[in-house]
Image 1 (cartoon, one colour):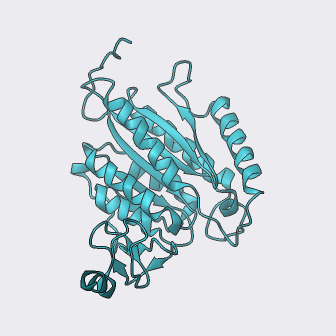
Image 2 (cartoon, helix red, strand yellow; image 1 turned 180 degrees about the vertical axis):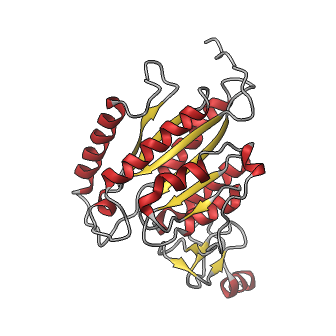
Image 3 (tube, rainbow, N blue to C red; image 1 turned 135 degrees about the vertical axis):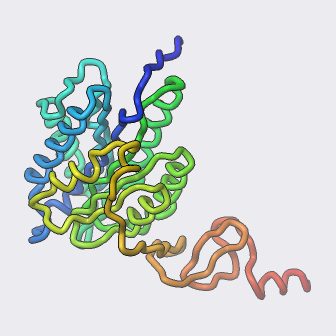
Length: 283
């Protein structure tokens, strides 16, 4: 197969991967601080249009992040795709995805607001970026924007951290815009480690203004702007045994697995801890 032809891009050309939170449990829960899904989507579509209008070479890819699954719903570089994200095809694919995710969610019993599949959408975004990297020596500058509202899922801690370190190694910043009622420790760490921007807007009625003024700028232009910085970052981890967030715990010195309680043996790599190791050596 012949390699894809590389194109010459300037510093202000961006590949924007947008991770759109479509968790039905989050949007169906009445919340005075969060807008409706239709209002949220109108702000996002206006923002995507502004990104494409800034430079005709900019690429936008939208990944819907549901409760059980995630999928691509728009790709501006795809053959036959209209350059305007307001097209009916994107909305139809998004509607089909939401209906499918809601049907899968009916089979699960969830208490409160369930977490969305952030680890899966991050992995899909990084795979797409790697495919762009290998298409030629010259490519647009990639970045990931997480539009997230659902609470963190401690069970996804390992997968999300692996995705964060993969993005850091590939020098792909992860920007985060949290629209939920509470901060996201996972996205705080993602933006901090990868050099992205973390923002939790105070007035969601003006979400488009936040998106256009903070996240529409390319990586080259960010060197000349004063972007918002987080006051603090929640570095708490999740234990491997119960998948719960902990302040203090035990770490395996071999594989770095984290546990909330002392164990005689590591459940990940099988290493023996403490007194148990002494007893084995004495026998």
